[in-house]
Length: 611
Image 1: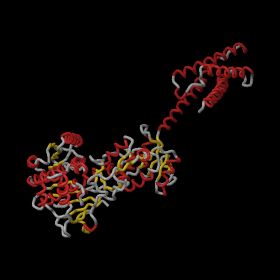
Image 2: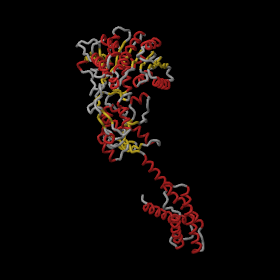
Image 3: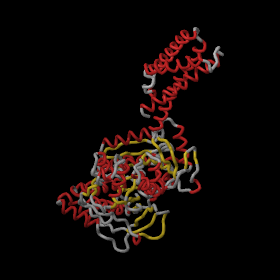
Image 4: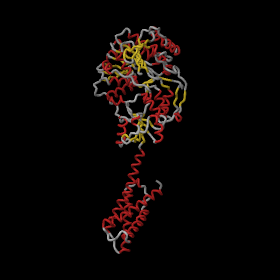
């Protein structure tokens, strides 16, 4: 409102109050003057003129009443009192009498009504300001989840979200009014509705959505400039991890377009609950998550083995706090996989029932420059851990591998393939059931592209991608950890469990999604292509249909063939690798790991499908 509009509004409002008040006062006091007689008309005019005079004198028409306080109330009292005093003087001088009762009531009415208009001004402005600070929110999903979140948003004074509309693809809900919020269209209308209704935030309020459906909805939301948030997944609500009102930003994990692997809770409980469990690499991304997942099944003892003292201390403190009432005993052990004597001592001390072997070097370019370290940690370290487990009577040994072990082109992938051969060979002559678990890239793990992309976005870009056609298979850390635990429960010995990772993801698309999720545009941040690094492939290979038998040995688990075990060559490599040049060692690793099996392979390969 402009100053001129404000002045006109207050001037005419006060004029109405002044004239109304004197006639109402005359009615209440039955003063001895008729409404159409000169004395009342003169009194009315005197009050009107004097009020406006003193109102201008004390700047009642210039004050910002939306911020009014005690000083503004004092100014009203002064202006009203002096205008009444001026009227007393006029009545005494021109009428020879003063109508004190009538003027006293008029004074009170002026204070109440003029003060009331200013108070109303402030209250309306404050309410409007609060409404303006709230973010106009479009709710996706007019079902029970959407209704619940709208009820909470409307009743909570702490949230900054204001629901203004629903969208839902159910035609029976179109044009309905739910808790005062209309259903204005379907998912395909999100872009138009966001523009027309000036939406600031889009809230996906369907907890039961599958990942592919989330991806489809997000693609519509990404066409707008609005921020996109989501309710927790139904599995997290049911498990009690979060409540339905804990909205969060959409994360890249939500956009994988694949569903998490289901766990056989009974089988896992049989293999873990009340047992002694040891996790190598317990301080790493995968190892620490395995510890968290295993702890939910209440093992008797959980040994946290790792080389880095800080990470082991961190996961120990976290588990002790999170599971303090579970009765689980957590024991940290600092050990190096390359120290065979130490590994044997640890295994014989605790004699675990199950070992999850997560410790390994996983960084592809670093291992290309340091192939001897890949051999020492990934091959020799696995051999030491596996031999110690076998000698200590461990029931099940689960090794974490990688999809890069399939037709490896990198030192890291080749070293992992050799480690698979070692445990498969040992399985044939040991009481211990040795199995491996292969999966693709893990979102959020150390060395993952996600933390790197996020840092680059925070710095304003650009995001660096090695090649525009680079694709990878992705899974989350919890999914990977659940698969490892499931493999231990299903192990018969000698299998390599491989998760069907769903559809591959273009790294460029991943970068674009991360940029958008951060609230930026691709144009502002930018994407640069740096070239394929040593040892990298444009795409990682998964097993084809011709490598898998049709029958299922367990829901979504298949039996297949794998490469022959070349243990003699591996033993020769371990004896002589220290004296090899880096190039020679790299070639030897790839030569051993890449040999193809004949049509009748001996080892079995179990493929876990999530489709």
